[in-house]
Amino acid sequence: MGSGELSGRDVLAGSVGGQGRRVAVGAALGCVHQLGEALVPVLIGVVVDQAVAGRDTGRLVLWLAVLAVLYVCLSWSFRLGARAGERGAEEAAHELRLAVVRRVLDPRGGAEADRLSGELANVATEDAKRVGAVNMALMSGISAIAGIAVSAVALLLTSVPLGLIVLLGTPVLLWLGHLLGKPLERRSEAEQDRAAGAAGVAADLVAGLRVLKGLGAQQAAVERYRRTSQVSLAATLRAARAESWQTGLVLALTGGFIALIAWVGGRLALDGSLTLGQLVSAVGLALFLLGPLETFAWVNAELAQGRASAARIAEVLSAGPAVPGGDEPVPDAVRGELRLRGVRLGGLDGVDLDVPAGRLTGIAVTDPACAEALLSCLGRESDPESGSVELDGVPLTRLDPARLRAAVLVAAHDAALFEGSLTENVVPAGAADDLLTARAMAAADADEVVRSLPHGAATGVGEGGRSLSGGQRQRVLLARALHAGPPVLVVHDPTTAVDAVTEARIAEGLREFRQGRTTVVVTNSPALLSVTDRVVLLDGGRVGAEGTHAELARTHETYRTAVLA
Image (cartoon, rainbow, N blue to C red; front, side, top):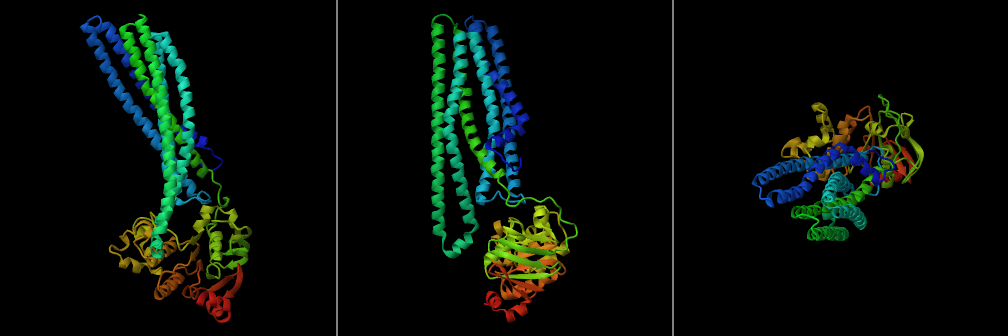
């Protein structure tokens, strides 16, 4: 299931179609189970007429043995059918989770637009689970239809009026149940939207917990979440009320339907049209019908919620890309020359910039918006509104985004660390070059971090690296970027949280480690800019000056103000 114009119906169809074999097996076993359930009251009626009324002990033992065999079949068919249905539901939900995650991680981006991370997590978990459950609901619905059909045939054979009541009344009940499920579907969609919003706000607040504590803004954050949570709670309660009304009304209709069958059966028995055993069978079948009809009430609720969740999943899967995907591969031998011509985006206003291959280039800015826009262009998170960005003379728009990002790595200063050890955050899975790891750690001064931890590099950093200080996280992030060893490395403010001595060591380590490879440092740090081969100043969205750090610091007032003030 990929991106494109998808609807909730497409998502549901794909989910059910992918588990068609399991649904069919589960439905078949469910039909066997329903057949057995319907035969129980029929056999009890036979026992009453042939054994009890006639006081025939032999026949009583025989029919009781038949009932025992029937119950064994009932047990196994239910067990195997339920297992097939549950497995189909879980695997369908799993496939949907993978599809959502693949779309979110798509190199072209776009799925995360206007959505908090917690909201996307809610779509990938709760919504996927609800859509997957439709497989179980479908299987149960088919089994319930089989149970009703068997009951109708048995009642027809017992009494034509009773059979006709079931055959004509059941479609009416199903239609009414469908109508009653519409409000639930609308409220379920609203409930999931509000719940996803609350989850997104919660994840956002937890991620910024340290900042909130530092600002003393915990109470404001709590109030914000309380308001969002109250809106979510109100939507959940509305959905719960809709579900209770729908279930209650369907059960009331079902009860009235069963009462009608029992009343007609009683009248026929009084008229002598039915024997005592047949009356027992008719009443038993009427009571048995409660199960399939209650199942339909549950199926309607599951389908209503599944349709609402499928629509939300479809929105994510069909989200347009942030950047179009190119189809040209990146050459194996990347020189690493970057060229920007007339680039306009955000704070950039027609930037013309050349980054020579194999050199360490510093870029200082007077407006942080220019740095963000530049990083977005180089990492191809966004394409320029006008102008072009080229790698070795090839426009980035023509290159495959995933392969481009392997060649041009943009290491943001606020990138995430993951749950796991420090080593696992620096070294990709499967990479085991101890010398390279040691060099990268030393260049980023992350080896000092290792020495300060209780278990060295094997120490867990916690979710988001929260067990580390800001400066330690920056050094680990830089070590990770250096270890990746891309042909072109772009780093943004890698030393804002470290002291001056550590910053000077990192500057020298960065220069030595990246010797001969294209490296761009977007920063206003004098220590980092002093080790670069060349510095470019972006002022007012354009290139305002170029030269070495020493030259610009001596001759350019705007540069001195931006870097040395």
